[in-house]
Length: 381
Length: 80
Figure 1 (tube, rainbow over the protein chains, first blue to last red):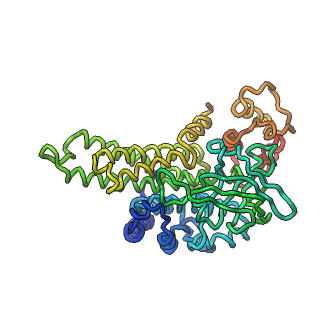
Figure 2: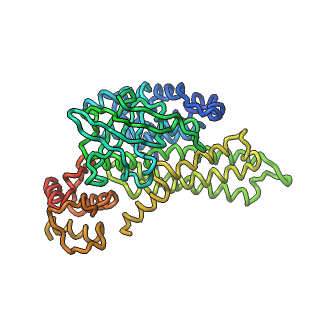
Figure 3: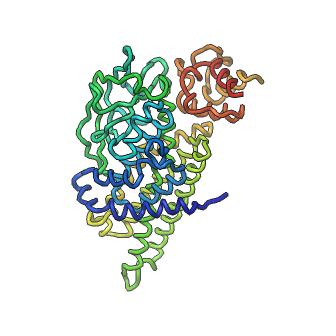
């Protein structure tokens, strides 16, 4: 076993921290208050190479291996305080670019990937519907083949990046007799007839990540924009969820690491009862527990990334990683707020925002409860 | 045990537990009948890869390869 990153991977991580701290944090507080997406930051991220991390150079990306991607995303999570921007980036990379790269035709890859990498196109995927969340494959959106195109009808809900997206990977039923195996995926451009999006929804956290409704009303999609074969939607969705659960949560690990450093700094400086509060076990044990959660989160995340790098399927491991990291992140954010007391509860600092942002991780990409269902099912229960 | 018997056994004991029939018609549409759900398919793929030492690509996870016992046997045979 080798638990170490290569020097290149460390360099990428350190560069990402430096880039995020210098470029992405300015004005983050204001944007949070205004629920404003950082488009300039998005473009700067593209210049840095974030959107193209796993995409081969021939399509405009950096072509990095998965472990280097994870190291870089961890660095971004450490340096960037705009969790909404990070969530937008993660959705763009793992639920749009990644499936395009894996399942796309040469035409689709050449047409969309360069723009997705250079920051001119914003992507996402549209799966969730008003009546289908955890039971994702019970969707009602339908795609009917007519000649050389599909006509899609349906409504998608809580779609990350929808209000700003140029393309979305839309899932719809092409064969209602086949259940989950009757779902197909389509690359839908915002300009396609019958495609519209609603206003950004006001959520509890991740306020700088625009998220909204997508309406497909007789939306015309050329056959060449179907991703993979008819009926491949479930496999595409499962594949992208595995990637997302393996990589998105690297930013959480980075953020957890930063929060612990902030807490350590604070408890050494803050004096009560004539000594630093770090000297009270009630405080130091909280930080010790936070560190254990961080270390275990790192290990489980790196293991999944390593499995994916070997080309292995990792449904059990990615579900465990997603569950553990997201739950640990919430617990650590709550402890960080508690350690900072009234200052932590104040909106002047980021600790209350971090709690709000972190809770989303227990819900998106499959709730904690669904991860437990997957784990139990694979165990034969 | 043949490939078909192997797959039938895992379907009856792990994927479609409680199925009244003790035999599965090799041509029966398991997707239409809802015998295989998405989690079941995940387990089935893991079983096929480990039992027959094969690697099934994500692109091969389409209805025609998992519709019935015979289509799964064909898929495995293509990899052997």
